Every structure is written in C-alpha cells, then in structure tokens.
Length: 443
Image (cartoon, rainbow, N blue to C red):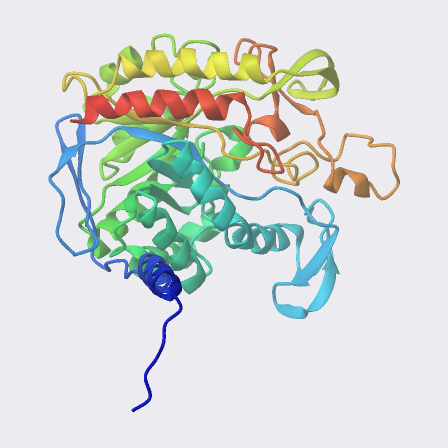
C-alpha cells in the first residue's frame, strides 16, 4: 500500500489551508446571507416611534424607542455631459444641465430623473459602509430611489445588513401622485425589513417647489391626504410621513402648516426641513401648539463653504461667491443643532415630540449648480460657451437665507459630510462620535 510521507511542516500547511477555506466559507455565507422578506414592526405609541427589527432568522427583536440618527442621501454627485437616452439606452444624448425646452426629446427633467435614479446603484457599495462607520441608523432617500426594481432591492439589502433603516420618499410631483407609480413602489418594497416609513414630497408647501405642480397649497394637501390613504390601504405595517418646509406663518392662511395639518389627518408623522440658523428657535413649541403627532427634522445643517462675499440676484440667488472651505465651522454648527434636538427627543422623554433628525446631506452634489429644478441656472455666466467644466468642478453659487446659515448663503454643492470623492469631512467624524453617544438613550 502506498503510504504518504508528510514533510514535518505539512500538517501546519494543511491546517493553514483548512483555516483559510473555513474563513472563506464563513465570509461568503455572510455576503450571501438571505435578507428576510418580512417587514420590521414599526409602531407609534404616543410621541415615540417604536421599532422591532426583523432579524435574519425572521424573529423580531424587542421593540425599543427609536431615535432617527441619520442623513439625507441622494448619492448623485457629478452630472455628465451626455449619457444614454432613457427610452433608447443604446442612443447617446446630451444631458446639459437637464433644462427643458420646446422640442427637446427627451425633456431635461426626464433625463434628470433617469440619471438620478441610477446613482444609488453606482455609489451604494462605497456609501453604505461609510454611513455604517459613522453610526448612522437612518437614511432618507428621495423619489428617484425605488424605480430600478431588483437593483434597488439589493441596495435595501445592503442597508439592512449594515443596520440602516430607510425613510423612502415615494412621490415628489403631481405626476408621481396621479400616475399611481408610488403605489407600485410601496407594493414592491413594503415587506423589506429595512423600511422605516414612507414619505410624500419634499418641501412641497413652498412656492418655489410649486406645490407638487398643483396651483395651490390646498390642492397639494388634498393630493397628499389621498395618497396617504391609498398607501395605508396597501400597507398597514409602516407609518406614512410627509416633509414640509418652514412655513408656520404666511399672509395666506391656507398656505400655513396649520392649515395643511387639518387637510392631511392620514399622515402619521411629519418631517420638517428647518434652516433657522444655529438654533431651532421656538420650533418645538410651535409644533406642539398645532399637533399631537410626533415630528422629525427631515433636513437640517449647513454647508462647508464659508461665503465671505457674494452678489444677490432674483432676491435669493447668490452669485460671484468667494470665501473658504471651512469644515470646522460646518461641524460645530451641526453639533450645536443636534444638542438642541437631543433635548427634545421623545425616546429619552415621552413628553417630548421629536423623533430625531437627518443632517443634509451625505455627499457633496456637484450637479446642483445649473440644474433646472434647483433654480441656480439660467442667470449665471460661467465664462465658457458650452459650460462643460461645471460638470466636473465645484461651484460656489447658492441661495441667500439671512440668518439661516453662518454666512447667510446655502452653497448647494458643499452640504455633504463627505466630499465628491467620498473623503470624510470634519462633520463626518464629530457626528460619528455623537451618534454613538445617542445609543444610550434608546435602551
């Protein structure tokens, strides 16, 4: 009989190989672990959002008061000069700044929606681990997420594996609300354990956002109410929220947040985009006077560009901005706001009304200046006939909001906690520490 004669070190070699193989098997099992297709349990009890997470074995964790410690996440970074036609992907068409004009096919807004929806797929493998490192537990995505079916389902899987839940915006326009596509999105993802809640609109009560495309705030409110009711018919397991801009006071009574709340009783939780400076002021008192429902801050923060000089056009548009990149100022500003939020968290005190907040935003968005719907294009002379360099570089134009930011200007391409190359800014690290400390309040 043939007998194997082992070299004295052979046992160690084989043992090492076996160890490596076992490690690879375990690693692959983790990578390809099945994500349950059963929803987590999300309930509202008083002012608290109670979350029982669906675990990998299908069992629910114990329900605990939930603090939204998060970011808004759009993933989109640089707008390309051209790209595929969404209706004929083999055809290359000019994207420009996504403006609409007579005779353009497809229109700029159609090209933008198509391009924007693909950016999550492009960046999620980089972005999600960074958000996990930062101790983020919630992201708010905009209506362009969810349109890619299975690929977006895989992104939700990755968020779930990293312990991150999702506030999914399912409609941001009249077209979204009236074509019923948002119900298809809800139906597709309602059983995913990473879904925290659905959201309708983004600052749709502001004039510049055109009330979803309706003529009046009242019409937009009615559409929101109807959409919330339809979502609830389809899904009873998740709250429905809606995001409003800061319009507590207005000459027209029907335009105020108070009027909207009366029109939309089916909305369970409200998000507010708030930019009042280094304090939320009397925000929580204002809210408690109007509603007994909990609220979260769906956007807050500031950008990292410290504007020192600018010119104002159109009463709100800042051009010829000059200044310096000041990451320390951005970080300090946001932490002061989070300190104020923490004092109003219902998870720590059930008499409080705030569920948490989402710093705006994860990554710098170089597509914004010149984009048709951000209102920063059309009046800016970039000094280049085809303006191509603006697709690749930072631009400092923004919106004037006196008292809303430390320099009174929202420089739209600098709001990220990471830059366009996904390099963390100072805010990334200070929020990482802050979100870690907040975990103790959820016990």
